Length: 186
Image 1 (spheres, rainbow, N blue to C red):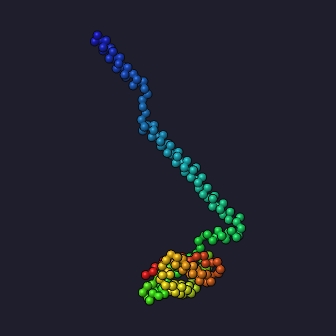
Image 2: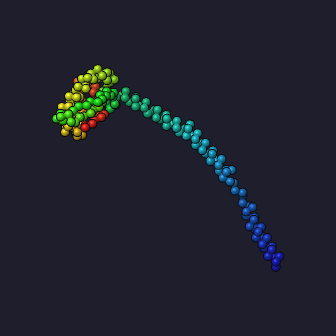
Image 3: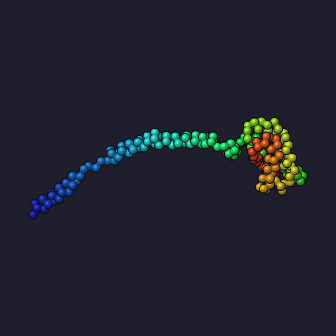
């Protein structure tokens, strides 16, 4: 009986070892997975560098060319409107310091003003007329009391008045806008 038990145990051991031996050995990640992953990364890099990115660059370079061609087909009247949307040249008048009306010298206004003009030649004209422009700005700002200089609506009205008075210094339509770069009331 002991012999039968030993034979049965041997068969169980052999049966248990047999499936383990029959299964193919597992290939480790380092031997198979890592090289496959590296090949995929290299292929993705070359696809991105030599196929996908050049397509986007070609599209980006082609779009501005089509816009330039479309400008040529636009009538002159409409072309002027689109040109007005672009930003012009800036002439800056700095450090206009005045005592506002009715302040009795107790308060002052410091303003830096930028004039947006259409052409670069307009800047040269304004540089020649800078004393006239500064005088005009001093007269306009000093004629107003503080309560007409401190609110947002007051600033907009002042800006429009300055633009109206500066327009005759240039050719018609060459003064695009007036901006307050610095506006301090003390």
